[in-house]
Length: 278
Image (tube, rainbow, N blue to C red):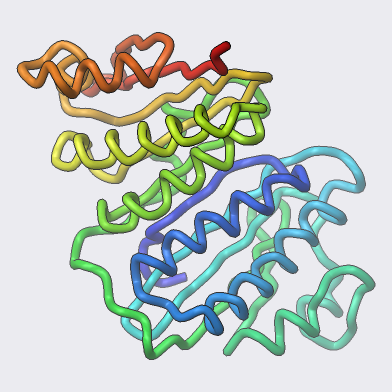
């Protein structure tokens, strides 16, 4: 993929995470003005590629699933990657079809697709979609290399890391993903709405306070969400709760059930907790 991605997801190959991928894609599609027909084609192809990782990459075990979306002047590039056993050479070259891989569907819906071995092990499925009707994004940079997320990765294996750039994309992607995870944590309808409002508020207030792209790490527990957000410029995390804007601090205090600020080099990370109430 040539362009730096606008959305990157690092998660496990659990079946329920395919919905998160689709939600992130829907948010990006809204940001670039992708119509429903084109979105359906892209979503179907991406779902097939992700389902292949769920079903085949780790021979029934759990392992990493990585997805990147890059909006370009000529369309959309999507990368779905795993660190599993890889795909047979005949499948990568398109000479044969494996049951369950959905290769004919992917080939029919993409303008080009390539199956590649990863140097560190596993497989990459690189898809390109020509989407003339999509609006170009701002000149703001996308995400850099995947290593930038290491500092924000939750310790627990069920942790999910979302990276988004620019802010115009984050406004559409982060609330969708967070509300979906709130539902997974068995939150009530009202509390799911709170999760979406929290995401809207944070994306709006952190514009200009983030050192580079916005990174959100989420750990889902029964009736709880644990979030790590950053990397923020020094002093900005505490200002959200204790700054001059008392109304903002009150809103964040009402929506969350605890917060803490930690340091990552010269930058800050904001830790938040949301719990089901009542």
